[in-house]
Image 1 (cartoon, rainbow, N blue to C red):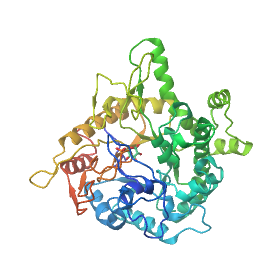
Image 2: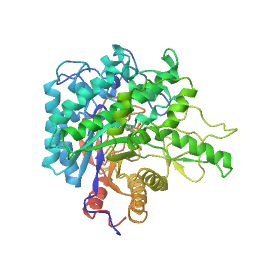
Image 3: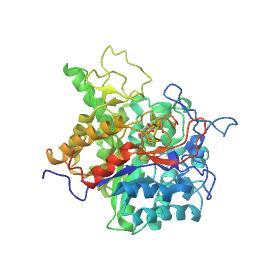
Image 4: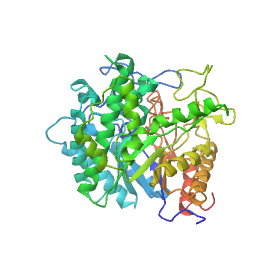
Length: 477
Ligand code: BG6
């Protein structure tokens, strides 16, 4: 095979809290990201307890996809998208998370969005949890540390599986749960965006809390995988992980070993979802730390029955592992050591197309399951030219280089990668910084960080490039 399959899913990926807006419409309840202020590369977002006067909360308006989804999906259709990964906001379906009955208006919204996608022959891939946790589950139950939240999640999943039955085949249980890791003292940011809690303010044994949250999410995922197939045997159950390939700083064996260990930490949940049991090495490691995650016999059966059908990977950058004597920036999002062989984006993310081929090979050889790239893209400052168009040749260059490596992984290395979903095909709110000016899209949205802009949508130069690439099924890569 020299070319990609003609079934290859070209498309993009979006998340509800980063673009829908309408945070108090259609019966939606408050969710954790509704309390996240806007920040920047230099100033971290804040997560306030209440909505504070005079602060900006970008999720409240997003890019108003809630009201403009038809226009946006039409533009995706014009580009020739074969697939769109979108998330359902849990707080639209169960506004408090623990409600007895679902909110009908929320269900109907997603049914309409999915119908609109199908109208344009776009295969929907639905993520059930992309940082959209109803706030009430944090304040009343203590978030994912509480096992009850696993049951609430399953009830919500079941509601959506029935609501979109026959229309949606590909389901994603969680986005990037792997960023919660008890050994790495995860930053406040990931503890918050995944679970609505602030790491530094956690009471008791912080590492234990993170381990239990990570365990409960993994358990919820395997139980949901069973539901996904029970409700419709033709469904495909997946989970999306954000993996940052980790290289040693040099060939000193101890640095090579440390790099391996640093990268491997992110794989225990994938192991748990692919091998039919929660990994023994992880259990022993946690026991050595005096941590009891409370696994039951019933849980063990869930791991045996709830394996994945496919793996979703988000790939943005690689990193260099920590090593003895390392003076790197402790606050860097991921490893802060500069790799002299690669450039960085304006937000400090290392641009490494070969890392994508490496990750695809690594993951496919380890699990042998079909893989879909669920996010990849370049956050950049875009300027509208005098002709009213953003000429984003830097974005085209980034995407083209990554896609070339993906194609090599498929046609030369025989990795079963069945799709590529570019992150943020329309400009939307940045998850880590809350900015609009960190733009990813093929479509420019006139919304600025000071709140100005008329929200109009305009294709960028990359829009036409991607359209052509999809039309020729990547032949020119
Ligand atoms: C991924 C998340 O980790 O990174 C997305 O799944 C996020 O939600 C993306 O938007 C890019 O990060 P950022 O901060 O540039 O938006």
